[in-house]
Image (cartoon, rainbow, N blue to C red; front, side, top):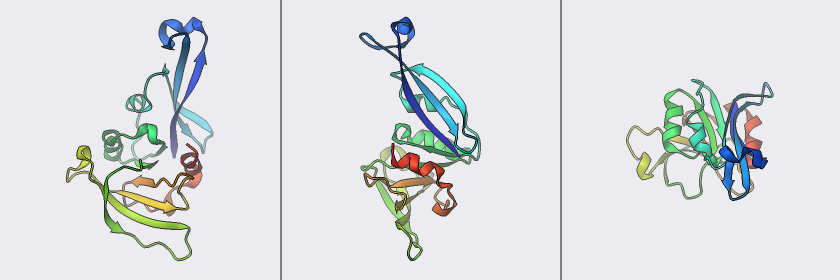
Length: 173
């Protein structure tokens, strides 16, 4: 499993020629793919601080078959499709206004802290083609404090098979 995120770094005015964010403020952003099992970064890209997370992510190397965990800064259906085509699994939160229709309501084990487990298909205009694969969503034990739903792709990935080490990251970002 790999965590993808970024962090801002405030810089001195000596970096003003390439890292000026606004008048008198200089900064950079470190975009990182991190392996929590190895406790080390796998990839680092440094950009000016005004570069969006998804813009940098589209330049990152993709390891076919890997599981990537990321927050809402990487919410891009096209990029998700690229990861899906490479056989990757993704784990992320959904925006509360994401339009989906339920394809299948899946059984939840008795006594489980998961409240719902569903296969869903996006109805967003940019993803509403027949080839767009469904996603799997869960609400309950893996739901953050704001009530967000955790989603995975492909939809066939059972939540029990996902290493939980990335889920606290999602709950707190």
